Length: 217
Image 1: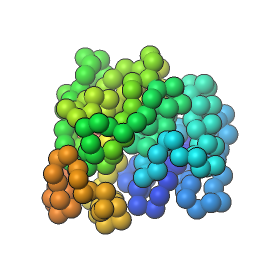
Image 2: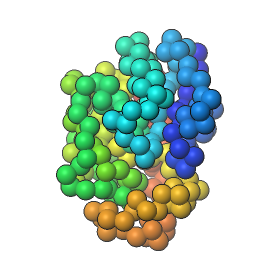
Image 3: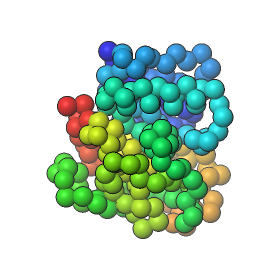
Image 4: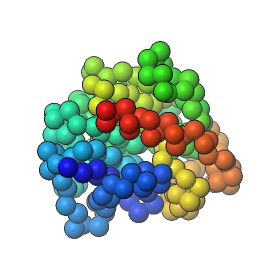
């Protein structure tokens, strides 16, 4: 049994999640080896510029693993692309957000009274143009004005986040430098410089770790 993090591109890194001492599987290196679902203690799926509808062999294998882990009711956390993959595996539609790309720091607001460890508002990093319908039997946790389904929990074992709470100052710098072209045309009107000078909310780390603790209980 082990903890596993699936990383899709070099510039979307685990950040604060490195403290979990999980095995990081770099899908982009080509010689990756996915674990068996039965051997998973925790599965974390990071973001990436690819989409859930892309027909990569590794992406097909990844979706199969996600489905198997869900069936076994083991804990999964999906971030950005990871959340979209989970949503698709749960038969929800994934598609471009009609309101445009969310890129940069903006608040999301809690949508439920339960889950007392979750604050009523979070200021988090967004870096996505796609969104998804809420999967059947999932509970919406957070929304924003431009994107109703920002976070969900499914069967108390699966959490999907459209946004990034794992980000550190170092990983933010790497993301902005490597994917700066994506910033253009974002609905918030942020520049590269404005994103880089934003101070990351300290509570994001503690809340993310509490989410993981919750699904692993």
